[in-house]
Image 1: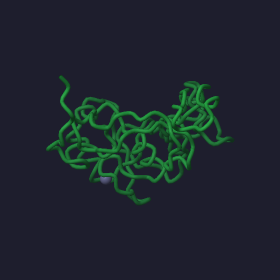
Image 2: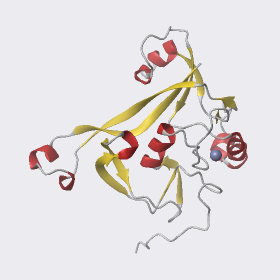
Image 3: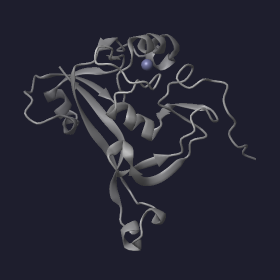
Length: 193
Ligand SMILES: [Zn+2]
């Protein structure tokens, strides 16, 4: 018999990154989300600290807000422009990103050799939070390409879209509820040197 999730002793933003999903935060389907200016996006219950942390899954809305508002994924507080660091972002060029089919994240007109720092779904951290993460997180410790790098002053953001069928309760028109639409899951971030 499944037990309802209990509050964890682990502290959000201290023991567990703020952006991490918890087992008590169920998926809620598709709805309009303020984190992406009211566009259709995946929704998820908002109960960090309930149940157990799901370290390999970001919470969908917290992830979008972290990129949109430059919130540190570890502590959830805004990062000032002079204190933004990455550990897992990968150096790329406009050409190498294009070769991987990821150039949709880039603004038009960059030269093929333009230097980029592809952060994927991870917003920059405070220096203190980056130091703490690299000590505590086995995923970061185990990644030989992990390196502390300053995040560039310019960046671009692009939505990662997936096809979904919105639930009927979010729409008055039954017809609209039955056709799949493109919906925002996460936001992708790329630093532009
Ligand atoms: Zn922080």
